[in-house]
Image 1 (cartoon, helix red, strand yellow):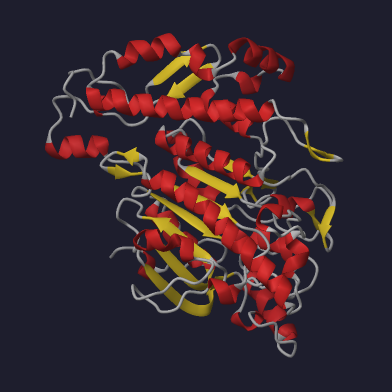
Image 2 (cartoon, rainbow, N blue to C red):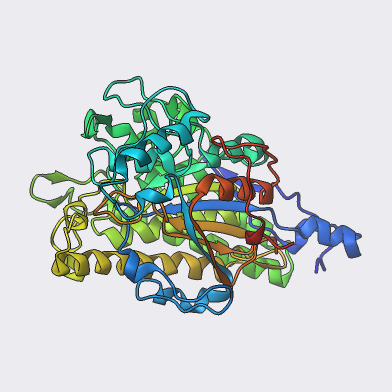
Length: 483
């Protein structure tokens, strides 16, 4: 309740030298005269959506839950999500390929490829059908298909082509309501160029986001640059050397707005003071962690350069990106985000969980039990780390609930079984409640071959973006939303 009588605009920023810190939703942003439905409408949290992408598929036997509806049991990989079973919707059976490709039956593959070519023809006439399971190109097409539903053009040149991704369709409709149109992040090196996968450009491996069919959006891997984009002002329009001098002079985003912050906090009620204090403390902690990272030695291992601002350890990098995402939503700087936990074909090693071998080669296990177990351990590790993000969302107040109550986060991959490069029955979970619109707390098992594009059309509706068609699909999945 606003007891001070002071009314702040929802778009209140603390400004300083090259900095502009947006504030979270406060009671003081609700006019004291507002009552009942009017106050509730003013305090209503916006819809938000994010995707978290894991590369190279998963061990499906250790992923798939048992049971359907609300009577489901979580598998080995999904076990860390147990405390969020009422906040999650597991969706099985969705993909970007005909059902006959799921098991890689050699006798059916030629017919399936023809079906697949026809399936995508309505979406985009150029290009080739995605390659058969197990063939080169499976990772490149998985990444480019994931959010577009459109087959990519086979090329290693600059003439890459796919489709507009669902996140960017949403961003085009609602991105003007926030300071940042959309946020594309990655925890894997995306600087590779040329031929990365069977004659397909590395671009297809490096991003899942496409502003239009000819414009891929490279994700940002450096937390410092993400931080500056969220809380800086005009730095991105300046020469890099000027930006560096300004950053060195400023030293800290919060230092530059300190007096204004103290002045504002003195005018707020007790609950708002606490919320602003906690929020600014969070900003300061993120900034400190970035500064500590920048002071680390420049090499993670002999011969491997570490760009300034990127933590040496994967878990630290990922958690920092999660914290930046939470901060972006908490201050309503953006409502659309994507994060590559790893790029397709990722060669990351995981010595911290006793898996020193590269991820991608392990997924081509050819039935080797030792390799399958190591892939499963990587899958479990990704899930374990992702619960950090869920914890942050669930524990961050937002309007009359939490960020998790008012958002939806899709966790999944563009490949199911990495050994076959299968693009059907993709591992997919939607977390959150989207302001009560999602049918959370259940496992929905669709027939194998149901198109992922149906779900994306449905999620666009939830975000208030009405589309009749997406990637050749006009169907929607009524079961995933509250009727």
